[in-house]
Structures are given as structure tokens and as C-alpha cells.
Image (cartoon, rainbow, N blue to C red; front, side, top):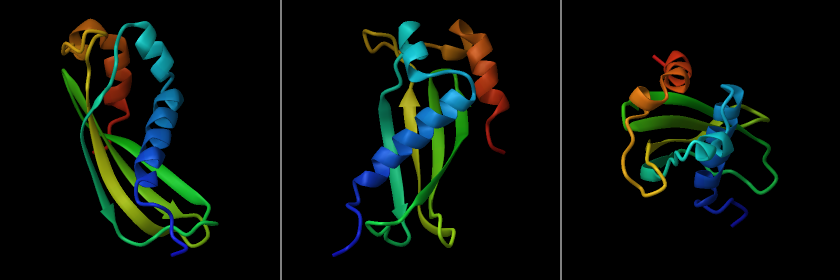
Length: 122
């Protein structure tokens, strides 16, 4: 069909999310070193137009919502050549420890929480 497999959009979300966290000064590896994991608990994707095999893409990511035990990221996938919006979506993650028990991230890691909160859209 000449178009990218629909499941790749979720991989692009992950790339956008991890890049955003790095730009804020915190990597997934650093969070895991603090015994914090961010499993996906909800995901959505609105397909607007298809990415083609040779397209160069722009992944825009932001923090949409931040609460004590969860964080929601929002994404836009655009074709670089013409800035055509191809897809939008969100992922919601729980802050959990290594036993998958919820962690009140704001209470336990106020400095990181503040950095995330400061960079939230809206």
C-alpha cells in the first residue's frame, strides 16, 4: 500500500515522550534508577492522513495532564516536507514502583514533579 504500518505511530509516541523527558533533564533510565516506572495505562491515536515509507516526520510532544499518580502526554505527528498533520494522540502512564504499586510522584519526587509541571501545556 505504500503507507507506514499503523502500529508505528505508538513507537513514534515513545520516541517523542522519551525525547521530551530528556529535554527536561530526566531520562527514563534515571527514573528507573529511582525505582519509578511509567507503564502505559491508556493510549489513543487519531489517524488523519497516512505517513508514506520515505516521509521524514516531526514528532511534537507535550505534557497534557499531571496528577499525583499519573501523567498524560499529547502527540502530533507531522510530515516534515509540508508540515501536514498525520496523526494526534495521547498516552497516559501511571507512576509505579518496581512492584507495580502506585507512587504519589508529587509527594516523593517534588523537584522532578515541578519540572514536569512547569513544562505542561495549557
